[in-house]
Length: 332
Ligand code: PBG
Image (tube, rainbow, N blue to C red; front, side, top):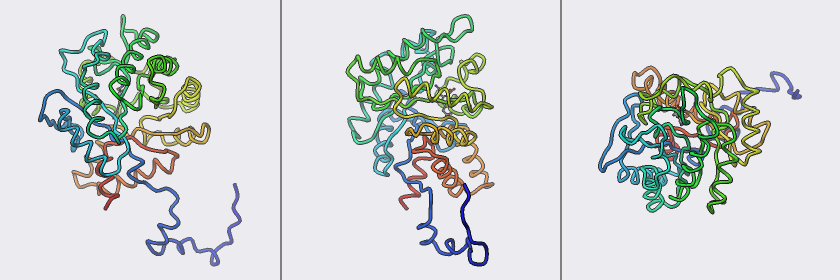
């Protein structure tokens, strides 16, 4: 694209930057609390509040405290939360059966949140890792992560979450063909209005480290997730992943992690014009928070600058552990 721009001195780019009202008027991307999805960690018990060591300011909460925190987030204008469970080691098995126990921690949390804050959207992660004694997103046999057998488990898990009242099913497992199977399973069980946000382009990333502490899956994990999550150098492959998930019935697509993959976000948005999201993951949060706490960066400034970069790259919304901090700032 070429723009007919008269040159200096008739053009002065600084003219529209000279005052706050003028900068506001010419702003291209803006961030609002409605752009934020807040990932939260739930733990068994009551009155339990545990600091996640590698994510200062992020806590695992028992359901009673989580319900209050979610109501506060809703009052700040945050439209949705994403729920992740810390499952007690004793409930983890090689078949991950706890994932589709209708009384599991996730289902009870969904029910409690929807009962107290019905106006907020609840999104549930579909993947076996919190429930699997192997720490992988799928079933493991002889060191191989099984695809088709895992999908059957994921469908059970998703239907169980939808029965509990979950609004958005978010498969993060990266098995092939899971979106079609999930859509079919949800529809057959009367959940035609439950949406799917697919972790469509999810990379095998070192930035998930603090999350694995938060849900307690890091210790169990044997090896890495490179046979199902994507190679960080690939972007054409991300287009194929996203295209497959859309054709299988995804309502919304996600790129993950966020910051190191904003080029992929832009390509996805331009190519598919879908509701597009990015997950500003645990390691990204830890970097900013750590540098902020050390006094090396101004936390609020870099947080807002980083969050608006997701909007500029083409995101309709962003999953971020900064959601509450950012919404408070935005609300003044
Ligand atoms: C697992 C899952 C992961 C995250 C969300 N769901 C970790 C992984 O794939 O190992 C990462 C989120 C984060 O780092 O904040 N299915």
